[in-house]
Length: 196
Image 1 (tube, one colour):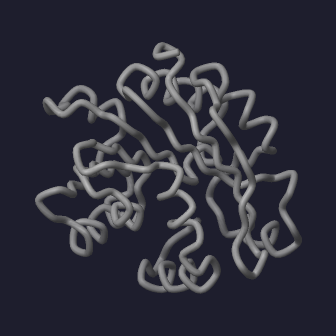
Image 2 (cartoon, one colour):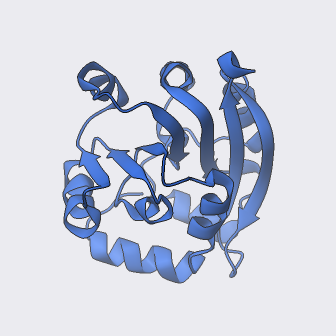
Image 3 (cartoon, helix red, strand yellow):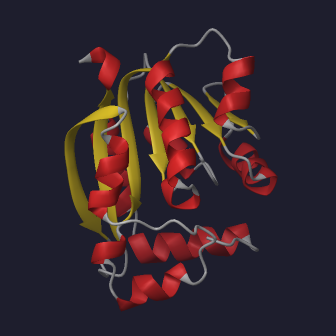
């Protein structure tokens, strides 16, 4: 989504989804206090609230990271203006137990998605939660919102599944929507292929 005013963006997101996305993602992630969670494309850092242990947020948008640092930084929450590749090169000793990739894939080409998921498969030990929009199930309002999104690779649920299964085993996936039924998203609960 093109974000000129981050506070307005956060308010609109809160009105549209009423917190249901955050709660649903939190249940699927099931993060423990002893775990480290990596959030790739963390945006404003809102999902750091569902992580009781160590949280590391990455985003290449400097303004979003600055907002996240001001609003959510703590001893357990860190935010970096880096790509995953840069993070891996500078990686600390923290093993990554779980990973969030929320509304990122529709910003990446198939080739970029495969590169990202290949890296994630190598560094995440236990679980990956991927959430993205479903082009096939989008209603008129959601298709209207796509006009304001700077992601140019919006895919159907099956197209997402095809990309994901090259790198992970999908334990379960489902569609969920806002209480107003204005936005529909796919959630994939995955484990790295190397751990099966």
